Image 1 (tube, helix red, strand yellow):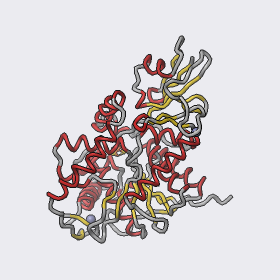
Image 2 (spheres, chains in turn red, cyan):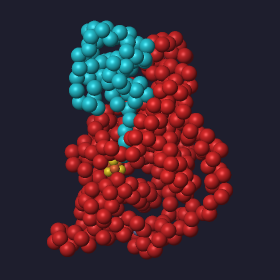
Image 3 (cartoon, helix red, strand yellow):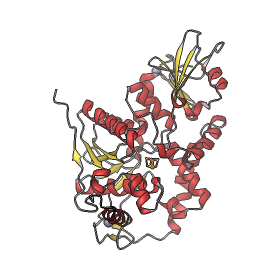
Image 4 (cartoon, protein in one colour):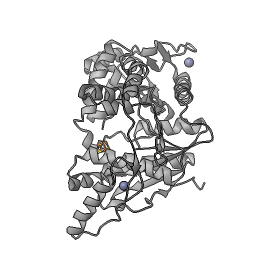
Amino acid sequence: MRCVKCKAQAQVEVRRHHAAFCGPHFLEWFEAQVERAVRRERMFGPQDRVLVAVSGGKDSLVLWDVLLRRGYRASGLHLNLGIGEYSQQSQEKCEAFARQRGAELLVVDIPSEYGVGVEGLAELAGRVACSACGLSKRYLFNRVARERGFDVVATAHNLDDEAAVLLGNLIAGNVDALVRQSPVLDSGHPGLVRKVKPLYRIAERETAAYAVLRGIDYVLDECPNSVGARSLLLKEALNLLERDAPGTKQSLYWNFLEKLRPLLRAASEPVALRSCLHCGQPTTAEVCAFCRMTERVAHKLRSRVVAPAQAGREPVGARSGPGPDPA
Amino acid sequence: MKVRIRHQRREVELAGVRSVRELLDRLQLNPETVLVVRGSELLTRDARLGEDDEVEIRPVVSGG
Ligand code: SF4
Ligand SMILES: [Zn+2]
Ligand SMILES: [Zn+2]
């Protein structure tokens, strides 16, 4: 197979675009796709401060890499979820990445802020791990972004992630989630920071290829809680379709965005948000779900006579680090 | 040929595999879900493989 640009030996095939690229032309194509998403959806501009949610996995480090290369003002935010070896490795990968590039990385250590990791939060609050984890991520990304004066939060959801979530929401008839599923989520409340997904045009296989070609060192191990996750089953089903009908994932997601979502939006009522009585973050209830969870956990931890963590007090202790390499 | 399959944490020796397409067929892997790497080079489905090659198969699907 030959590169469509220069006829050299191809390294990456992009079947849905009937294209294949050599290493350098693939990297060029990839960055152009991200840039196009950012501009087309007016996600942010060169002056905006972008907070990139980085897990240490391939997608988020790739996103951060591209944004820094394109000259955007992108800092990373890593949440240490307190999931044993996996969390430790993840944080190390983020720190090494930031150090090599002299980029700013903020870290929130959930166990030291809230007394236990996300699995402990889940257990004590009577939720499943991924639900406590997802709630913590949404809450902390927004809160840290607002407290630190960022204009936008960027997450690394790619085409495969979005297509799988969409399929899941369609199966469940989850109308509210469908209305909210978009590469840009504009804030309808002063306390809610704008959220964007600059990789929504790019397949997961392509972010992995970018990471390998750029030599980005990411965590290959998966979170132990993802074993048997429904999202993996949905991705597998979509990849079977993709194998025999290239472009299926893209058509599914893009057609949804262009044709279905506008209809759903027009038919839906905007939700009224107010400020959480305890932390001030936007919520539909009096006290937000995150405060309710962490307060319940703090209470249980106190009654276990374990030293309580400072749950739910401002500001969250995001510390900067490791910062630019001194060398 | 030596094949390192990262996500299954195993290594296999295969003989008589002449291309990436054949390799993935043999291992029953969907090409959409993996990358095939030789040294620092990524291989497309039609790339030829030799008996002395050492390749790594990397999963691309992450969950959660
Ligand atoms: S799989 Fe792990 S990282 Fe992902 S949501 Fe669940 S607990 Fe969090
Ligand atoms: Zn080329
Ligand atoms: Zn709150």
